Image (tube, rainbow, N blue to C red; front, side, top):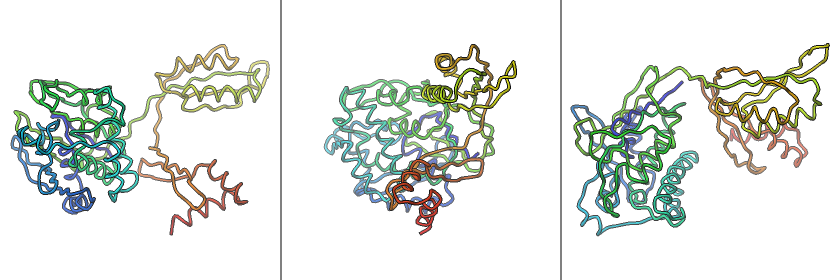
Length: 409
């Protein structure tokens, strides 16, 4: 399984993630050129070689109209990693943007649709955090650090690079957030900054002896969005290694390290709840299955079974996540006639799934894309095909063939 492991033992910021991922690409110069063609107003990406604690890596500079955007605003949580300018200079160019303005900029970028969705989703995470911290609705949030064009650039760059690298899983180490206080437009705030802390809920984080803000809101949101899990590096055959360097010098190497390679697929742990019934009608079993699915079951299926006294019966299997088993057992007892449920711990391998909305001459059709274990395939949703077939007087096979034909052109 193609695996990306991100070592965040010195936190993460947007520019550091960009630098690390850029080093993983086959042709960083060509990708840098592509980043500079995104059309973000006045923005230019530049790279420079930096050395931290004797390790060489890539540092990212984002210029806005020839100047580094970090010099233009005070509420810049990334100052430990990226910029550290005087507040007098910053206040002279202070800039605020709302979510609507940011969305307009992103919509104009020549990005694949799934990348654009990722960029907006990352901004939504930050907007929700700022909304919670400031006690205002999301629509009223005016971004400071994240509303400026360099942050738009950082987020767009990371999302595009993740799309190009296309890992099947992204595992992130526990995140070092730093310690102490950080100065911003509102005064001194504890580290991690409130927005960062909110974004990193349910993520393993830790502080330490290093004074300073190691993880920024932008870095936190990118990690939260792309991580499939957080934890130690799995057993993997590493093929490429990238280092994204921060600006500031610490006693430890100030970088994000990215390792790309192959690992064995992790089997997901699930629970099999199964039971027999011989006194329920087919309709009753169907109704019970609907209720069990609604309770969160992963699968419900039936097997014909021979029961005692030679009665035909039904063996019903319910697959669920271990955390759901007691709640689903209660639903099974509520809607079936069984007096007992057998429980087995098991595991399963799954392909990665996502649903895309495809625009066709017949309207929007949902398509399920699956990938993993070296394969990828797509399938249109049956209900959407059936609706078109009924409306157009075609068979489902004819509708499928017409959609595939259009896709080729």
